[in-house]
Image (cartoon, rainbow, N blue to C red; front, side):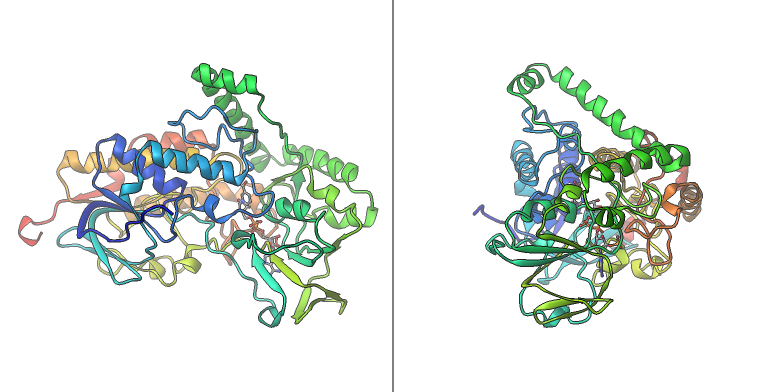
Amino acid sequence: MKEMNNTLPKYTDTVIIGAGLGGLAMGIGMQKKGLNDYIIIEKSTEVGGTWRDNSYPGCACDVQSHLYSYSFTNKSDWTKRYAPWNEIQQYILDTVAEYNVRPNIRFGLEVNSAEFDEKSAIWTVGTADGQTVQCRYFVLATGPLHVPQIPNIPGLDKFKGKVMHSAQWDHDYDLKGKKVASIGTGGSAIQYVPEIAPDVEQIDVYQRTAAWVIPRDERPYSKASKWVFNKFPSLRRLYRSRLYFTNEMRVWPIFNPAIAKAVEFFAKRFINLQVKDPQVRAKLTPDYTIGCKRILISNKWYKTFNRKNVGLVTDGISEIRENSIVDKNGVERECDTIILGTGFIVDPRGYMDKFNLKGLPGHDILEDWKDGAEAYLGNTVTGYPNMFELVGPNSGLGHNSIIFMIEAQVHYILECMKEAKNRGVDYLNVKKTAQDQFNEEIQERIKGSVWTSGCSSWYQQSDGKNFVLWPYSTLEFWKRNKSVVTAHYDWVKVDAATK
Ligand code: N01
């Protein structure tokens, strides 16, 4: 067990919340600029975020390893095209060691308040154990997919067997010979169901909406290719760029129905080739346009339904009893284990409900976001000076590496800090007009996408507004984050006497 520091200093220049890929990129980015006066507050006892929490069987990234990694680290020995969770977690640990970030992290502390004082231009950040730290800059790197969504199904609390969410896998629990019910068919379930199916006696998969799943171009990297990537970093970078531009093409079907139809044709063929039983095949075939929900990749998912011990239930769940699940047709199926592949609470108004976040007078985040979470470029919010978000509203992705977006945002935040320093001001606050214009533009663009073609997905808040995704190319995002449009901000110097 590594030594943990969980004492907050009285003051530090920058507080970052979260030691996942975002928070670590921010910390390392600051160090590289010689800005060492920062701390990262992490509620868990280890770094890694998603890749620390998600360790279910078969858990792997569906973005290629050479791309799903920081541009500034030179890892050449990824074992395969899509790295498993533990290889990514090890990569994160190695990066933390390489940049010596650990001394700046305070573990086991959950931030539950942050308040900005207009007179001094100082944030006071508080943690659940009663500590506080003051800072000039405040960066939210909490990640949009970290709070498990436990479904509100009648009787779940009365179930006598084992219940676990995919992001809270109990590795001490032996699934051998168990009768399992797995709820949900998203990115997590399509990875763990095929892995556990050979071990369990029976697994019934409860599907509410079928997912579009396309082939995964998986392959291990040979010793020779690792050697080449190690010896010739420029070739590794070239390969990375190739992966990047190939993924970038996946944005085309999102805005072009004809391309979406063509992709759908091949995806249907894939289902037909993989699934033997025509009735099961029909149930697994989605009834919405491909791309409306996140497109998933697996070579194992559909085939798994050819197994005798794998059932597919599409009639919905009416209740859970002590040892069984009853579907909406009244059919009762016994089980001793329920696995919830039911995703995460993505809307920040859901997972920030116990976080008291207050900016300039009159600005309370839950109040400001009562109609939906909004930011400018996904990273600054009107009324919250010197506060930045990583992967905030409408800066998420479904088609390429989120690390690309994170690095663009880190660059942008550092540019903001530099500009504030050059101007000799105490804080910057994005103008409401700039934020509103940005969001109008984004929502207008989204209207023309496949995401609004009639499905329901975690990209949307309850009224249907897509608050998650960036609707342009990632190059466009990089371009807009390259430098700060200074006219979009108020740059404020506070009265020295009140500091
Ligand atoms: O969660 P999801 P996930 N009753 O929200 C169903 C990332 N990820 O954990 O579609 C019955 O996608 C729900 O049904 P429906 C990736 O971004 C990345 O699988 O709403 N069913 C759905 O089928 C991914 O998209 C990697 O009708 C209920 C499922 O549960 C995101 O994480 C790997 C229900 C939830 O699917 C989340 O994936 C894995 C209920 N009450 C995951 N509530 C990478 O490789 C929900 N469902 C980077």
